[in-house]
Each structure stands twice: as C-alpha cells, then as structure tokens.
Amino acid sequence: MIKDSPNPPEHLFAVRPNLDTETLLVNASQDLASISDIAVHLAFEVDGAQRNVALGICRMLEGVQLLVNKALDEAYPAT
Image (cartoon, rainbow, N blue to C red; front, side, top):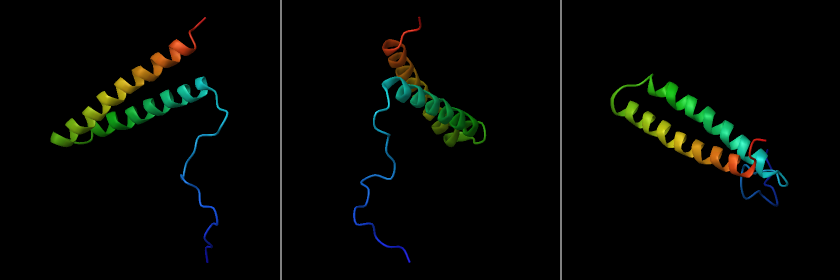
C-alpha cells in the first residue's frame, strides 16, 4: 500500500538551487544537442509528412541551441 504524502511536491522534477548560470547553460546546450541527434535519427527512419515534422523539430532545436550557445559565450567568453 502506498501512503499519500502530506506535502506532495509541486513538480516531479526540479533544478537544484544554487547552480551557477554556466552550469545551467552548459547542461541545456548538451541536452539540446542530444535531443537534436534523436530527432535527426528519427527523420531518417520515417518518410513523408512525419519526416518533415522531424526535420522541423531539428531546425527549431538548432535555433534554440544557437541561442543557448550565444548566451553562454556572452556570459562566459573564452579567454
């Protein structure tokens, strides 16, 4: 039997407090790259409209990846 929690969490997942911006941006960038790889793989496994949808997702991910990488470069320029 599973008991109900007296204080159930608001969200299933949460970001640890006190993580610095660089860590957040680097992890977001890596996650976006992984999701993009999955979408590219999917795009070559399907045909027709489904392929177009997968490729559209790839393009959107690439745009978000560029934004995250730009924010990372602006916040933490290479020395």
